[in-house]
Structures are given as C-alpha cells and as structure tokens.
Length: 443
Image 1: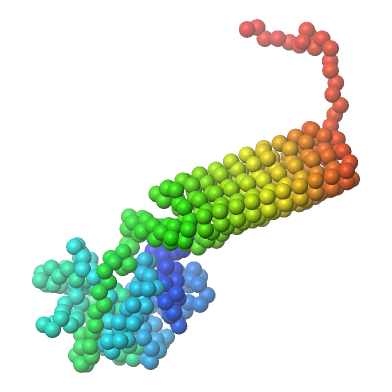
Image 2: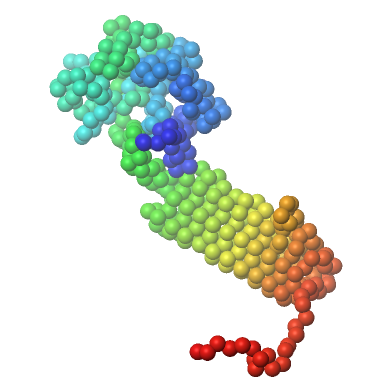
C-alpha cells in the first residue's frame, strides 16, 4: 500500500477495511470475534469494543497467525477464519459456509472458486474422488510445480473448522516451504492423514473474496462496495439519480421516496427522512434530516434538521446547528452551535453562531452574531416572531424579546425588550457641496 497506515485500517465507504469482515461475522451470528494483530498492536485501538485481540509476535505466516489465537479457540465450536483484507465477504456467505461445514461433518471446509487468472492464490489439489487433498501456495518460486500452478480452482483463504481438530493440527504445522513460514492450508493434509474429511464450498461470486494489496485494488473494491450500498438503498425506495457521481457510506440511513441528486456525498452517521430532496453537489456528514426536507448545493457537518426544513443553496451548517421544523437556512448562510426555531427563516448572507432563535422569526440579510470576545464565547438569544432588519449585528451576550424589531444597519449591544424596536447606528449626516471640494483624479 506504500503507506504508514496499516493496510486493513485504510478507509472503505465509511469503515476501515477490517471492520467489513468483522461486521459480516457479527451479522452472521458469531459468538466471539478475534482479530490477530502484530506485536506493535497497531489495530487494537481501532477495533470495535466487542472484538478480542490475539498477538502474533512475528510475521511467520497464516498458520502461525491462527496458532497465536489458539487460547481463544473453543474446541467444541465451529471456527470460521476470515482475512482482514478481504472486505466484501457477506453475512450470507459466512452463514452458508458454516452450514455446509456442519452438515458435512468434515473437520475442515474451505471456500473455493475458479478464476481465469489464479495468480497469487493457493491452488486446490483434489484427489481422484474429487475430495480436497491439499492447497499449494504459489507466492514464491518453488512452492508449486508447473502442473499445480496450472490449476484454476483456488483457495479463497476463508475456512470453517471444527475447533478441536484445528487446534490439534496447528500443533503439527511445519515450515516446509520456500519462505520458511507456517501456512494455514498445510493443516489440511495433516487432517487427511488423521483420517478426517476435508470439504470444499464453492463460492460463485468472486467479488466476495477479493483481497486488497494495493491502492488500485482498494479503489476497485470501493467501487463494488459502493454499488452494493447504492443497490440496497434503491431497493428500499430511494432514488439515486446518478450513482456514478454519488458517494454514500455504509452507515447512512435514507427514508423512502427520498431523491439523491448528482454530486452528493452522504457520510458517517447521516440519517435522512422520507420524501426529502438532497443535492445536487451537497455533502452531509453525521447529519440528521427529518421528513420532507430539501438541501441543495450545501455542506452540513453535525447538523440536526427537523421536518420540512429548507437549506441552501451554498449554505454551511456546522456542528450543533439545529433547525427545527419548517425552518430555513438560505443562500450563503453559515450556522453553528445554534438552535433555530420552528418556521424561522435565515434567508441569506448571514452568520448565526452560538445563538438561540425562537419560532416564527425572520433574520434579514447580512445579520451577524458577534459571539467571541477574544477569550470566551457568548450566546445571543432572539425571541419568537422577531423581525431582524438587514445588516444587523448582535454583540453577545444580548437578548432580543419576543415580537421585537431591529433597524437596518444596527449594532445591537444591549437587550431589546419584547415588541420594541432596537436601533443602534450613527445618525445620517449630509455634507452639501462635497462633490465640488472633493479631490478628483484626472481621467
């Protein structure tokens, strides 16, 4: 990957790569999830709380990695082995493998598939009866014969084992290969030598077992994961006008009959209600939007919108911006850490920060809440049914009573009582004949 970031911690549609197989295992009903990490414990802090960690002291092959987790393997249960860099495996595929394994009574069952180009994969060698005899690795010259390298059926690296049989075979592993490592597939001939059956479960969708070793492969997997996410939303009743230009991360929730316009990015824990219109050219991050909301050409991060809210175009809603039902944040409006009341409108060209605004108010163009004195933040409180004229600045802390008005161009530094008009500006003065005295430049 040519990266300081561990491969399996690279982001993929809203999760790290390794969180995808973890989520699939959890959805499939795994009672215990164990991740094998290295001695630097690079993964430990990035894993979900319900995941246990085993440490492989040295990078000595897949067999040694599993052996590092032996103390956490229950000999009485079925054990499934997944790879952290194979992110597209699904809960259904895991369940099907486990079921096939348990119904067959085999000591081990591997997931296999046939590839046109099997380069880099371990080849599945079958016996005369069609059973799995062994898996031959091909990573290094000399690991496999030319005949074995010509085999197209490959080991996906995904297995189901009877826990007790796996533990016994791991004790007998030897590093008899060109790399001098302990390969997990080498447990298969050990089990066969002990008279135990080895099964194979064929996977027909090659995407489920795609591995990632480069950023090019990560980009390919990301396209497949994104298509899967888009498909799920479309089947649930969401219209995605142009999937090719739309990014929706895996944790996003979208209600029925919502339309997502081109160039829209929906990320993090974003939740969108029903019958909404989002986009075009809109980004929502960790934002909640109620039903019947319209957000166009805007950027929202950590905002909370009620039902029937209108946002944009060119609005910027920052963390803890809350717009209650039928409120509006219009063109070139920025709001942060503020509560905008039901039906209140901030139509255009305004900054509202650290403020509380009641229901039914109207905030004129160019309104500013001056909330920072250089050391502390202060709140502005604007009541219900307030009419704020254009180019009003509120110097916090200040309170504007219900039903009050402000005069255009005012700098409000003192509280305004309910139903009063607050005007704070220099009186206009006209200087007669100024044009005759003013210096002029020659054209």
